[in-house]
Length: 119
Image (cartoon, rainbow, N blue to C red; front, side):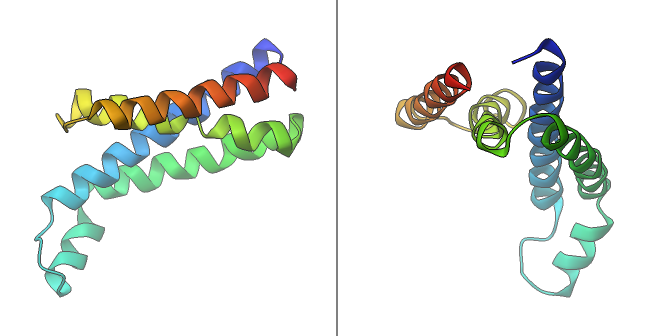
């Protein structure tokens, strides 16, 4: 894998993780009853709008990745966001992360490393 591709993947994971954090924060700040006020609050939340903007950037980053890497390599590497989201949700959202969840995420990451090394 070239350094350029690694940088594109890094940007992709950063976008995916930060977009998920924004969506979660926007959802947390909305009224928790699933009525019209929930949906209005959700779609008007600055956090949700930030998540949408970040995912728009992510779309173009992902298309760039697909233009230079085989899908059989790109898609498994995209799963690095699993570990990123677990760590970020612990750090930024103060969510509890069990050892089992962390271990599972690390197993996914090890599998991704194996796929990347053979690609």
